[in-house]
Length: 113
Length: 116
Image 1 (cartoon, chains in turn blue, green):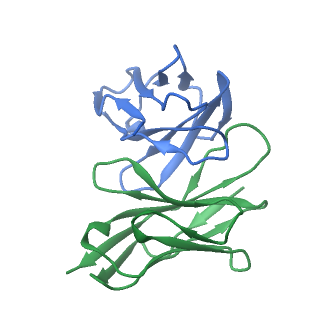
Image 2: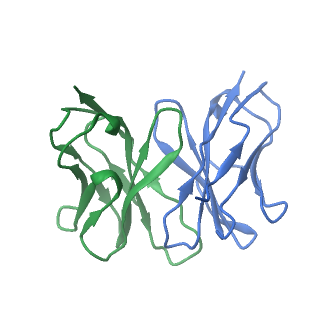
């Protein structure tokens, strides 16, 4: 069964460093999403991406965040200058179309020291 | 803007007992509603979804949920709990804004504990 994959599973970085989180969505899906879950809190929407551009973004997704689909398979989330409060689990998701369910990857745990 | 409220951060039931996890939503337009389950150290797995078809929705692992517009609720139930149901459950809403891809708004989650 096709699934969304994410790498790395765990990323540790120093405050102020740039990180890139990688996702491979399900191959025939057209809509892509990033969410984050701070420890003990709810899952929060960051951004959605369709047709090679951002479709919707939340207030959390400020200028330090960017997304890219550099090739036909990867979907990346870049955090330009990490802060302590960026420590969270980051989930990638994809869907076949905007009305179908979103399939989630296993997440990348980001720890900012 | 839409929102989701899940009553009870922790719910404990005995094995074999009824499971009831509550979810209320607010949305200015007809919503799409979802229940996801998260097992420890894993991602989110879809249990079931409501997309304006039948109000009683059946999902995987014996779970079902009923959409009640008058109560703005989408409670999750399972007639008989199993030890393997112990997990975190999230209710989520997506509204059809008519634009592009819409993100999901999640509730805070309910941790389901199954007592032997």
